[in-house]
Amino acid sequence: MIYPWQADDWNRLQQLRGHWPHALLLHGQAGIGKLRFAQHLAQGLLCEAQQANGEPCGACVACNWFTQGNHPDYRIIVPEALAAEAGLGNAAEEKAEKADGDEGKKTRTPSKEIKIEQIRGLLDFVGVGSHRGGARVVVLYPAEGLNIAAANALLKTLEEPPAGVVFLMVSARVDRLLPTIISRCRQWPMTMPAPDVATKWLAAQGVAEAPA
Image 1 (cartoon, rainbow, N blue to C red):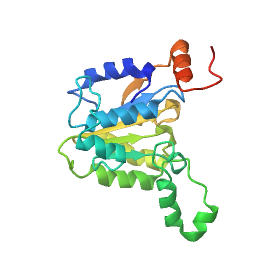
Image 2: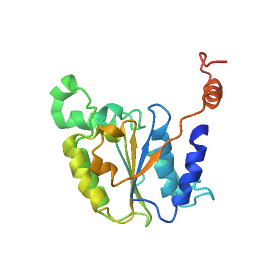
Image 3: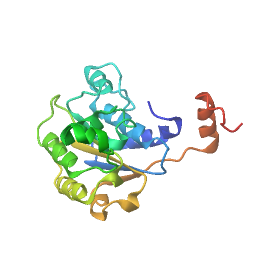
């Protein structure tokens, strides 16, 4: 699901259906739910029984795979330190620790950067065809987390995007992105929640300090 203040963004984005950009840069204030929006959009693109407004059905094989975190045509790339926020548990951290050995488990701090090794692995994914005959979708969060080597590696793919691959890049600091990456994305500024909408939503979540 998406947040109430994202409904207009969702509906306007559906106008791109049929000529979807190969890379969409969702950007805006930190903390307004951009990652959840991108994940929901990814599920909608992969859903095999989309609703009329592009929402995922939540019941097809593709949706079940997506919610279980094992859809073969979906990848999410995040820094190790943000794995839990992205719904990946500690998988990214465990993978890094395994690579570093027993000593890494004791001393290694999860990285806050998206590294070139992650992008190289992603290139293997986008280089093969779709398992389900539809789109392949990549969520990259936060885009400003790309280190220089990773950004340059990704840029080559954005310049010559593989057919059927959609990149959903999420950023709260587009000023930290390479201009060459920005220029190869369709930019989409995300709507800030109006105070009354945000207050109502916070109250519904039981946030005690939500303003009256």
